[in-house]
Amino acid sequence: MNKKLLIEIANLKKLALRCHDTCDDPWYSCPKSKDGCSDESKGTNCTCGVDSYNKKVQECYDELIKCLIQGL
Image 1 (spheres, rainbow, N blue to C red):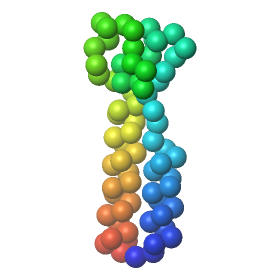
Image 2: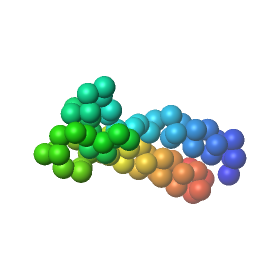
Image 3: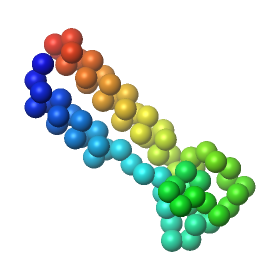
Image 4: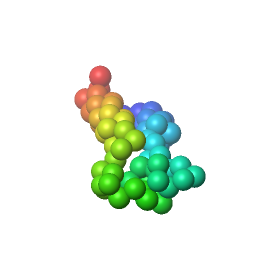
């Protein structure tokens, strides 16, 4: 297995992952943002789509690693 390729794929994953939206006005921030959200009616789930996006990044990463391990 090519170590350099594994390292670069891991670096690409780090670059692709996103953080939850944080706005200057915390009323509009995603509840999962680092500072949270002032609008309690939004609950505690992600409202900015980052959870879904990061899940796809992780799935892609996992598939690439699987292919490398299998020698494809």
